[in-house]
Amino acid sequence: MSKLRLFLALMVVVGLLPTWIRTVPAEPDWRPILRVTPINVASPQAGPMQIEGAWELDSSNAHFGSYSALVVPQSGKLLAASDAGRILRFSQPGQAETVPFFNRITGDRFTRKSMIDAEAMTRDPDTGQIWIAYEGTNVIERRDADLGNAKRIAPPSLARFGTNSGPEAFARLADGRFVVLSEGPRETFGDIHTGIIFDRDPLEGGTGERFAFKAPDGYRPVDMVQIPDGRVLILMRRLALGLPPTFPVQFVIADPNEIAAGNEWSGTSIAKIAKPLPSDNFEGLAYEEQSDGVLTLWLISDDNNATLQRTLLLKLRWDPAATD
Image (tube, rainbow, N blue to C red; front, side, top):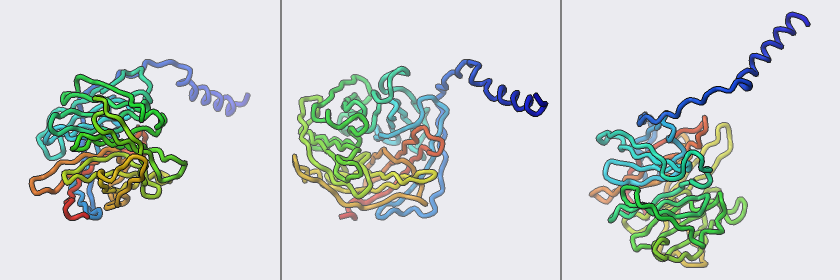
């Protein structure tokens, strides 16, 4: 064997050594560290909405990432839940900082992701109770304001949603009803999604009736909230293939009083967020009402634990009274 061939053979062996040598995995990092880095926004206008702030969130904590649900649990705070069954409670940028809280909301390190895939949260502002929708199991869970006293139900009306097209957008209405939208369309590449309207809390015996939701072409519902005037603001997301892929989103406003069993429900697109605005896989939506009736909207993105994606947080200002 020539010296060159011997050298190349040795390099192959050295290159393969990591696959032959079993190493001890690094211990998970549980330190409560959250880095919040501001992002410059050159053009802050998005239709009738104005971007007031944009940040990238990052942490070495093993619980961090993949956030797909968001609520405002109290003034100055945000609570995010991930599709890996984890939660993050942290201070809103610009507010007094407190130590961020990372933890599991359900399951453990041995639980399959499909069993703990938290995709949406909704909150009762009077009691502080929080409901969580799990996509992989089509389960709805209710917790007290401190996230304790968990109770769960798998409503029969959600059973046909499928394991990867279950409850994605979820909102408790002021009149006690609950609305659920499936992310997956009824037909491949279609724009009609199944919705369920519950007459009351599913955990208190509420029954669900099916309806159809018509989405803007190519967009899928990923979250929604009922705003103070009674209308529902729906966050819609589209996957645009490329290297890297992009995730333009738009907001649709709709009247929940027009939901009727067996009928089609739709709304009106009022704003879009896409490049060059700070953009990623936004899936979580929450809001706060200001004293003048203007709403502060918060968006958080799901980074899918992917190298080319980020966890972004957006703060937007929107006056619903100026939007018909």
